Length: 154
Ligand SMILES: Cc1cc2nc3c(=O)[nH]c(=O)nc-3n(C[C@H](O)[C@H](O)[C@H](O)COP(=O)(O)O)c2cc1C
Image (cartoon, rainbow, N blue to C red; front, side, top):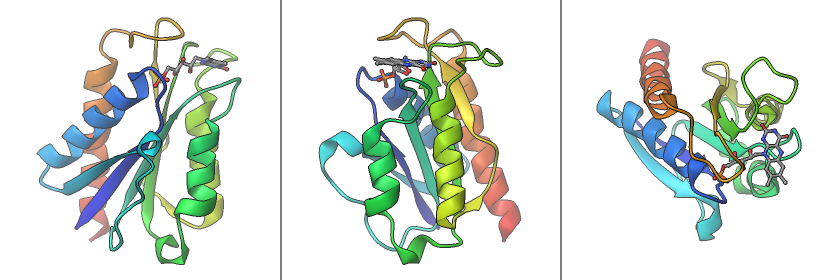
């Protein structure tokens, strides 16, 4: 089994979270590729799960992340497992909490993929970061949780 962690990031915070999530998955013995939506590259075919992340902008996911769902996925992804994540400045539970993750979660579900876990939200302490203390360890744990959920599907 091999899957992908796909992300968009302007200042690198969401990239760090993506890499930590991928690290948690890989450490559990599941192969994973990481794709930066800013690179212009596409996803290889034949992958069996998707983790998608984006910064939160005005309560939403960013345009490249939304476009990826519309154009970068295809029928082959229907029914496959997914998990979403996002970064944002607001604290969890606040009105402005990172909603980018929620939007990706909802859009992937509505597209027809199968939700593995509720979305993961990481907090940045300023517009350009850095990430709040402990967020990368939480992200790595999210990766481990994804791996465990994937193994339970078998
Ligand atoms: C125009 C703009 C709007 C933003 N709106 C929100 C928001 O609604 N809620 C939030 O939590 N963070 C918001 N942020 C903070 C971003 O989420 C933060 O810059 C981003 O997560 C950093 O990740 P990156 O380094 O990967 O780009 C906003 C940032 C910008 C530039």
